[in-house]
Each structure stands twice: as structure tokens, then as C-alpha cells.
Length: 68
Image (tube, rainbow, N blue to C red; front, side):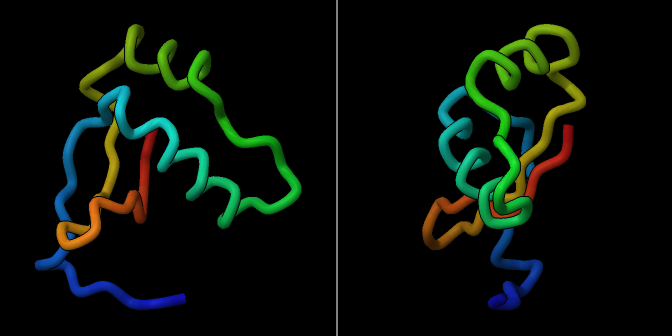
């Protein structure tokens, strides 16, 4: 796994546009386990939007971390 320097990462609240990237990340971290889909992620945002975060690599826009 590549190491990314902290200054190259943005941590922010999750947005709906992040859902595909979150699913890809979960597939890498938890192979063989169904990842969260739009219904689950939308529910999280609706119930507690200020508690949903993503870490985004600034140069590529890739989701490299998440917390819910």
C-alpha cells in the first residue's frame, strides 16, 4: 500500500459524490464483504451528517480513508 503524506490529504465531511469512492475503498479494505451502498451512506448523511468524514488525496481526488 502506498503511503501518502498528510499535507497531501484533505479531511472533510462526506458528500453524496463520495459514495462510489467509499465503496471502492471498502472493497480494498474488506475484500469479500459487501460494501456500503448509496442507501446506507445516504441514511448516515441524513441521520448524522456532521459525523461522516472522508480523507481525500488532493492530487487525484481519490478517497483514501473514511469514518462514519
